[in-house]
Amino acid sequence: MKKFQRAGREAEVSSVTQSSPMRSQSSQNVAPEVGAHTRRHVWHSFPSSQTAFERYGERVLLISDGLSPFGATSSLRKFLRAVVLSTGMTPLLVAPAFAEDTDPSRRARGEKLPDLERVLAVVADNAPEIQRGKAFVNASRATMVGAKLPPIGNPDFQVFGESGNVDGSNVTRDVFIDGTMTVPWEIWGQRSKRIRESEAYTGLAQATLGSQKASALAGAVTTYGNIVVSHARIDVLRDTIQIASDEAEIYQARAEAGDATVRDSRVAMVELARNRVLLAEAQADLRTSLAALTRLTKKSFETHPDVSPEPPWRRPPPPT
Image (cartoon, rainbow, N blue to C red; front, top):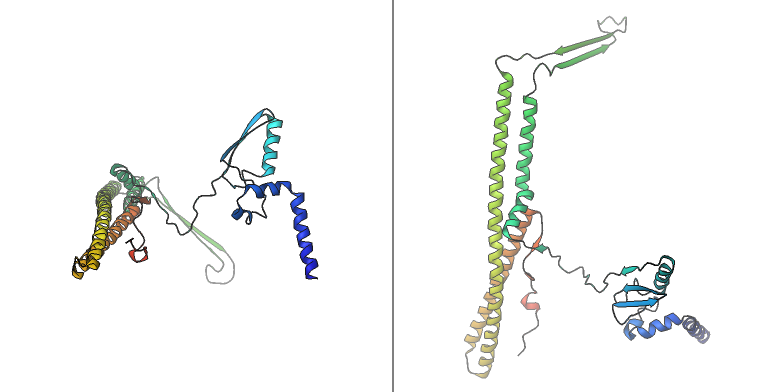
């Protein structure tokens, strides 16, 4: 029974292979290690990323990326031919690059850090304290509208209504409605005083906004300077670590050969460790400054290609 089932499966596979010449052609074009993964998909592997089809008197330019199913299926080729024959147009199909690195563990990077003038312009618009100050100014200006209203044009209406047992006799169910309209008549310049109070409130809000704006811009300049300094420290410390690492290897080799003491080798290793600690501190300072700048600008920036390298204990040992 097992032999019969196995023979049946082999016959089924052979029949599918014979009835699908496109599939056999695809398996010949695809590499052996890729063929096992593409058994369920009929893909074509072109030798180049750009293939021009000169057929039916029209030119169809197909841009694909190797084994991309969007750029190599037979149905797509038939569709392109039909478009050319029916409309006489030349379609251009651009397939996405599937070879792009999509590792979720890859750290997201922000945009490149612009110059100081651009940073200050962004801070002036997006800093939280500046936006808070602008809202305070708008609220103070809204009070000016109410302060300038004339008293006659702003009357007060009050209406009261009661139903049933108005006089306490429980005999009738009357309805009692009382309406009052009050028109204020201000004396001794009440309106002018409200206007002056609102103007003072608006001036206070504008002064607060100016102070907050100056503080935010000063913080942005300080943070930008810290980023530049930390960036330079990282570059210098990387070179210093490389020199200290070479020196430690040399002293280690000399100590093994008897040309130097063990103490000299240990001192070189301590110096290398100290520089690595300084590099980690500089990287932490850079990250802190970038976070502060992100709070002021509401944008993420990136200055160094790698501010968080792999820890030294995870690195492979240096060659001897």
